[in-house]
Image (cartoon, rainbow, N blue to C red):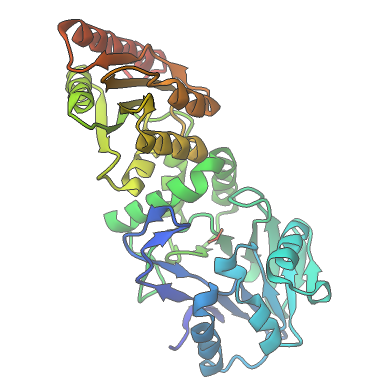
Length: 394
Ligand code: FEO
């Protein structure tokens, strides 16, 4: 495969992984993903920025041969995770004179996760520069978007920024340049929800920093290259904002229908009051869809049936995932029904307590829903309306 030139001797040398069904064994992928790698040919030195996911390393190395890359002086490791650094051991065998350029935190990761010898690594500080002759690489440490070892590499003369995982998408392509579409936006959002949302505050900071840099292109390590940086930066400005949308998320699991009836009722009554809702069947729904909704939701009402004497385990799993993804939601509550007794919401509340949500009085029903129970659900709806008014959403 002939490498595509991005700009002035900067080439794309990554690969598509079209059939990959899931990432991190957590979020299903709709379009596979790409592992991006960039070849930068300066007048004196040659650098490669990020490498390849290990199962695809043979194809990657073969492509380097076929494109005549006989000598590499520097291999920049923007991040230690194996989907980008996993081919480093083979790269330093193939190019024995090459040095790995990375930051001190990533150096420790490369040594412990990949057994890279210390003498192969040169560490750089924030804003340090490296000359390739007519091109200069400038390294910008960006910890916690998304690992503590993450850094960006700026190619000064071309005004292009390699942003590592930040601003990426699980998406594949024939032409490396992004063509804005709803499909790409959804992939980028799904990716943000899983990988970046836990670090929302840092993402917000670096979104603004990159806007201020006024770069010509953004080269992430998954998904297409952005010739129009504002396309992805504007999406990130929205997703990382402090306030969510006028939206209530209703993830639920219902064994005999009562919990689902409560969720349906809440959805219908909230809609009447001008609040959007998203019902999500935990068992049959796509986890990526829920993760994306968590980017925007202001209130989460979880619905669960009881199993033995506690919440359905599927609802516990979703509460835990939400606590890990750290959405910007501000309010929460619970509904559910039980047969013979137990504690339905304690575990869910404890797990979600990490999010410091303002909890609205839950509704627990024995068996079918009575008139009194509907009155309690009405009270919940009114409480949610007041909460949304209090933050300016209504
Ligand atoms: Fe795409 Fe954090 O690796």
